Image 1 (tube, rainbow, N blue to C red):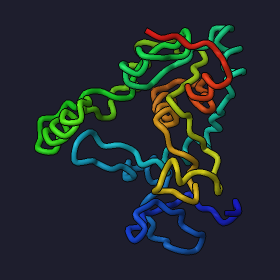
Image 2: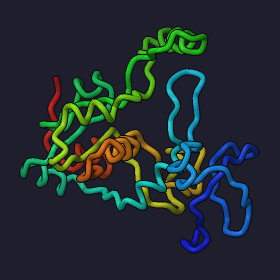
Image 3: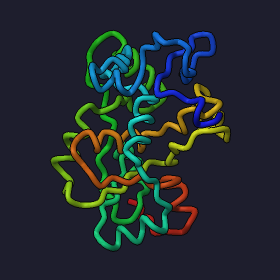
Image 4: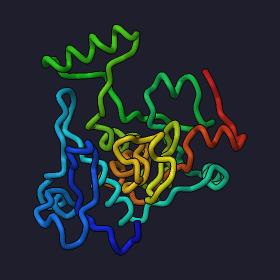
Length: 224
């Protein structure tokens, strides 16, 4: 899709169950946009279980405008040697099993905190699969601000990385809701970058390819 055909606005397409970009001159009543979110926080969704969250197309738009940079493992490793913090935002049990050497862990997940009907259902369903019921942690940005030095460069990673790059690719294997990759490839690490920037961090970078690429490129990892 050519760049000039894109618009900052987007909408939910119920017939195809996915987010789509609004074409210029059409769908002028489109509800969602980064601008709307900044003014009134309308571009959020409240799930049946868990806290309200900002929809991915808004986060994608904000990160692109802020010029978030994804760095390859080699560059991230050099920065780490010079004092940059590498931040693992995966659940603690994943971090404890395997992590980038020297990385610190502040998870964007927490155990399901609510006691409502759907919270209980989620706990029972996940328990039946011998898994922990988790949800996004709305306090992630606050915890990061308390535990990390905002004056330092922070490089964020998860398991697979994701990308802000738009256009056709292998998005279908990553995100069935965005087969044309209109909004890059959504991942928790990119969302975490957004939350850090919102929390007042200024020097935030994203690890390209995440832990998988880091390991593939033979940079040091450690295991418990």
